[in-house]
Image (cartoon, rainbow, N blue to C red; front, side, top):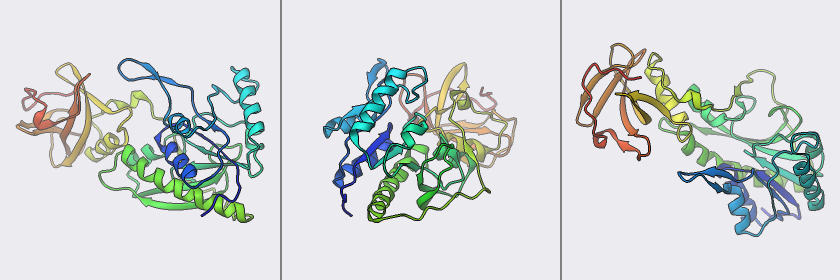
Length: 318
């Protein structure tokens, strides 16, 4: 696979996107411009931190733009105008978008000669929207995948140029599954760019049936509802790892639950059924959960055997 002279712009922000950018760079493509979100406060000190995409781009000496908006009539028109000038100067053949975080207005979609391509982490039209990986795990889907989509003005409604399925493993967290999807997305992107350089590519319209929406994950979703079935809670624990993390209260302290296993058990939802060295079993709306990995505020993730808490049978969890 060769670069074939294409000038490829890139817009993305998290680790998922940086994997594709790394593959573009490694394949020898000319990347005249990278767009990413502005630096954000992060960590305990809340210091400004560059996105994974910006860090990678700077390592390779690529020009980086960080507009707060791309809407010329929006809240930050000066940012959008600067981005427009940079995109026009870059003379792009195609703009690749992966988990960028900003909506692309029509003037951006129409600017590159071959349009804009999106690396989307689901098998469209299932899980259009912001959180396809998390929602697929939460729903108990057996598989997901990557679609390389020709972007249009709708929300993930464009024609699919390339797609490949990927199984969801029983212990997948959103972080682990995202990592595998990112690698697949980079490979499919290179295949699609190679095909585009050779001529027109078959575009498959998305079917009208089977559309679901992956709404953005909210912090309010973190609180565990113990009256739900155990398997539903266990999936949410994995789906919300690393953000926002499933949480509950124990003896007045807020804790994160990072790993759990479904098991047999019956009792009032949210009460401890079994407690002892390395065991903390909690009743759910149907079945029970063995809590396996916990975290106190400001602490590290710990296996329940090392957690060190005096909990007795019948203790209620918030």
